[in-house]
Image 1 (cartoon, helix red, strand yellow):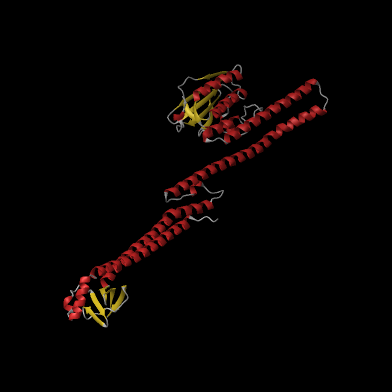
Image 2: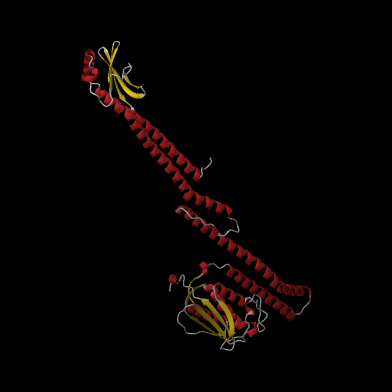
Length: 447
């Protein structure tokens, strides 16, 4: 079954109104005509009294009809007795008609005639139809004006509905059909009735959600491709080394000491591969971060936990948190903890640091997180380069994946801030994170 369009429904509704108005107008038209004739007929009935008839007949016998009957608004009385016809006024004689009501025309004047029998006489009473017809015409004109006004109003209302209500929906349908993979949600713009605007806004919201999901899917695919490409590039060398060592183990007759050395190389290479894959996985996860991952957090508490964990992870390391007021912000606790852990690991493994000092301060605009160490530091010329993927400083050991500071830079960017390296007062490197203080959802903080 074919579904009617809104325009077709409006047209059908308008035509139904027009047909109804025409039907009612016709009924009123005929009713007005019949009502006016009924009024005239009742007037003729009231005038057809026996007294008048007797007077007319008496006057007919005496030959004094004109003087006997009074003039009653153009009323004509005619009596037919045998072959004689007597009429008042005498110059107008109504014809002999069948008993009842009928219309007749005399000398160009139309009369409404009431005919009845009184004894041997046939009496005809006639009244001019001009006044009645005038009233009928006036009423018919009113009916025409009313019906025409209603029909015209229906046409205008239908046109307005088409313009104000249907047009926005038609435009919305056209824009919806034009949407493709490259369309942007803001391209769906419809204004008009509230319902059309609500539907347009709902479509825009739906497209926005679809667009967000498409962007996330695209980001995931790009991250997967990047992960595969980088993993292939970075793992080829250690895997080749592992294969060589395994071939040596399987083909050469070595002493126990030599075999143990080769096995140690294989284990170190395997650890390097595992560390590289773990770092790449964290980078890929960071690229898929959404706004829902940001929650109210206490930076000071996070640094305190990181310092205590570092003491257990690296025996002999002195890790302290500088006293400061509580620092609250909207961020990703797991991401920022990853930053601190990587900074500490880099300082210990590559810089030979024995002391780590953590601190955090907040201002009206941002939060600054500082990690100081007393290690070998990073040469000034390399401080920007080491934040790139697989970049290693000249003072770093070759066992690392080269992704630690890349993860730091990624998390700083995800938080809308920056990461930089400078010289530390302790003699080593200082990692400085400047993160904007997000306040959009701080009122939800459970502190």
